Image (cartoon, rainbow, N blue to C red):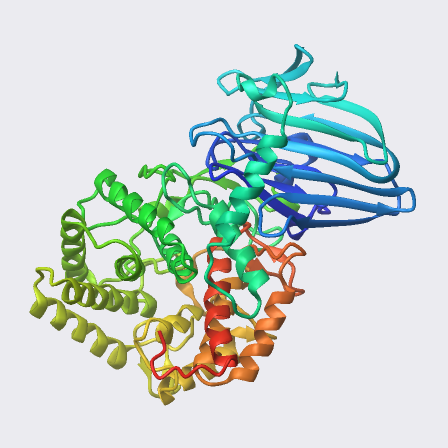
Length: 604
């Protein structure tokens, strides 16, 4: 396994609600897909060596302190160097000052705060995930990058650039108060013809701050909650209304392992949870746009309206065929690096519950469901009533044989329960008796077939004996009381078997034959936050508070989370991960209420 030059947790992320770029604390853009989040990458150094494409910019100092921070309540990132020679900083952002269909671009403004420094810049895009032959040419004072069959790119700058091995390079000196700018984008973007970024900077700054200020959360950890909301917003498509599971592909769940997936798609499950978190904070517009996106997904589906796919492309397209990029060695030699995701064709029955929970909340806090929307719901819930007793791949997208998973059964119950609640609230036509009977049958099935009398707790599979952290959602979706003795016994069993110093594994791989893959993985961030919320709901406030504070300490210096933690609390998996941040928001929301002494006779 090769030494990692830039760790996952050493990155910040910027974006323009169309795509995102990851920037390491050494000033290197090591990951960037263009022009869309799910387009081929042009910078892939994070997943291989620097030869896979990067945009580096830094002062030539030794023995300096590096730090990154966001401008308050924004997704505008500053990378700073503090040394004996002075202080230098780069401000990175993607402008939000034009129409939605504009071509994305990155603006990098380097400034000498104090002292003097010689800077080195190298911009070396490698089109099509590093597979294309990218050629660089000097044109009109800029450097253009071309590759056959790929969109052409251009770098403009306020300093003189030269060509070096199909890369743009520059070496320049700045004194106190001086600055230089670089703008990277489309070859036909008129904004690159003359660099005048002040208006875009102010507009982008105001956009992010105005959006962050719409949050109605004023409790403890407000800064972390706001950062999580801003991370979720970065993953939201301004054009389509979808929410990506993460900004990246191929980052491993185990160093040197094979669990390296592409998360640049919108999972019905993750996006629904995201809507729940955003609506809690008062962001109802995102919920409305997401609901419209789901409607387009249903209409585009290869199946009938009732059979949702697990995930869709960000533009609501249906196919995400998986393939391996053999030219990339992978982060820390974690191969294969995959794009696409074959889980799109799996059967995962739990997605209906997560979607219906989001639809129910969208109706409660936003617009009333349309006639056509309710027709989709009726067809979908009828399908759940017919299929809830079938095996599936489960929430964790097992690649082994399908099983009867408790979480899938639980969320089928949620789907029917929320549809019944919504139908009654809006006086909508529905087959109440049939749905109510199916809801009761699922409840009885869970209590009769997923409760292990010998072990004294619920189990992950029917008539099984092992545990799964997705069971932590049982009280969160109000299937079982948070202080029910049988649930508390299950919570204690999860603590004994899956929790280590507050970090929660999804399941024990050696107990889970349906996993179907070699190697292991880290602790799952979202499950760790679910565990905190379960402790708080169970009345174990002090324990929940301490575990939550520990989890906050595992964020990277910018407050961002990837999908998983290694044994030292370091980042594993794709980042920033929507599911991690929305689980943080939910845990903070409820724990804050408990610590504030609010009476919660009914716990939502």
